[in-house]
Image 1 (cartoon, helix red, strand yellow):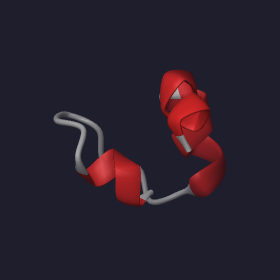
Image 2: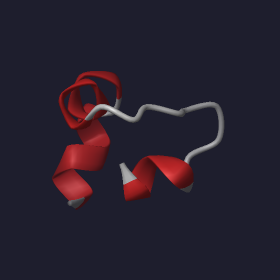
Image 3: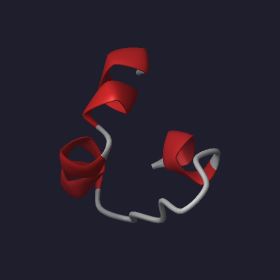
Image 4: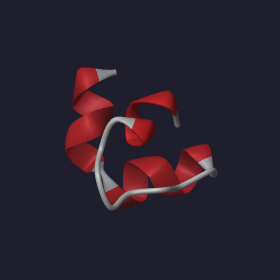
Length: 29
């Protein structure tokens, strides 16, 4: 979720949905 804060237009509080919306972000984490 912390990484999502750095992404514009993305505001997901759920960790599961985080990877669902930003799969490429999961790669960074």
